Every structure is written in structure tokens, then in C-alpha cells.
Image 1: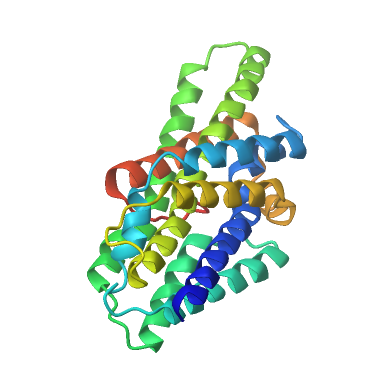
Image 2: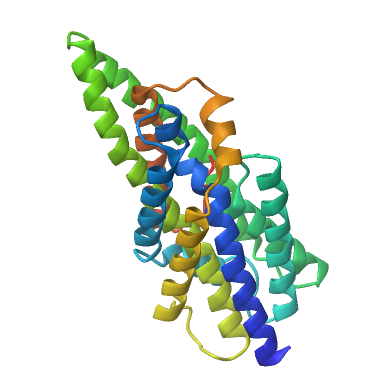
Length: 276
């Protein structure tokens, strides 16, 4: 496919980043909108800005995507393009029906599935340790942290004035929602970065799995623009149809989720789902 194939790969990776932004924007701001701490538009603007900042804050997950899942010495541009198309189609289908699915695992599954179909070597150890295990463990860790944070707040404020606590929690939830949006950018933009780096390596445009500045900037911008495009369908599902939220519940959920995102990105370089 050559240079035209690489251009197509980069364009599709950025398109996936954009769909990821409007698909997963709701994950970061559904709680803060559902609890009426912020109206939808300011929440989306905040999420877009924090997604951008998170996206330019690390590249460890990008390296895992680029060289840890499929054999870069035999994978082809066509295989990577097929994986991207599969992930984009899934994102659009689930966005249309308002389903809070994982864009991250759609991308990883698309890449691994395309690799199997093209007889490309899949590095199953990397899939197991960097994808499958974190996929199972991260919701359990989030559940545990959410329980502990909520229990701790109930004990800490057990004798406090309810109205003062409510006002304080509304302010705190803005900070926790911003933190979660930052974690979303930190995790999800790096997945597209890793795909682009994989394309650059297999076409001989670079040798190492370092992420060029232009890749970081373009993926961060695509994710932020996608977030600005909004995610109201999925926001309604997460914010209204799963659990009746209040600011303390929302704060607990966001603190717990962002802690898991930071831990997996900075410590384990594991590409987990930002939906879980």
C-alpha cells in the first residue's frame, strides 16, 4: 500500500479518535450532568479541554498498542486498516443506540481479529497481561474503591450539616469530573497514537516505538474535537438509566474511576476501557 496506505491508516486512526471522543465523552461527564452540577455544554467543554491535556501527558499505553499485541515484523498496513474500520463501525453502531461500550476494546479486538484473519502473529502474552487481565481486574478495583470512598465520606461527614456538605460536594464533583476526563484523554488518545506509530514502523518511516510530537498533537486534538461533538445519547444511558445519582455518588464514582485510569496508564501501561 505504501505511502497512500500510510496516509489512509493515519486518517482512519484520527477518525477513530474523533468517534472515540464523542462516543466516550459521556463517560467522563454523565455523572456531573445527571446530578445537575453542570449543564451539558459547559461539561462537554470542560471534558474536551481535559481530554486534550490528558492526551499529551504520556505515551506508555501507545507503546503497548504499537508493539505489544501483534508482531510488527509481519503485520501489514491492510491488517491495521481493517482493524481500525471494524472499531469505527462498532463505535458508530453503539453510539447510535446509546450503548456505553468500550472503544478501547473495540480497537484492540479489531486489530487482533484482523491479524488472525491475515495469518499475522498475535502476541497472546501481551493480549493476556496487558488487555484481558486488566479488563477483568479494573472494574473490580473501581468497585472496591467506589465502595471505600463512599463509605469513608459517610463516616467523615456523619455529623456535618447536610446543606453545607451538599454544596461542598457539588464543587468537589466538578474537580472529580475534570480528573476523570483527564484520565480518559490519557488512556484513549494513546491507543490511536500506538496505531499510527505501528504504521510508521511497518512502513519504514521510523525504527523505534517512540511517539512523534505531531502524532501526539493530532491525536489529542482529534479526541478533544470528538468530545466537543458531544455524547448525549450515551450520557442519558449512563446518567439516568443505570443508577439515580447524587453529587456524593458521582464524586465517589469519578474519583475511583480516574484513580484506576491513572494507575493503569502510568504504572502498568495497560490499555483499559474508560467505560468500565
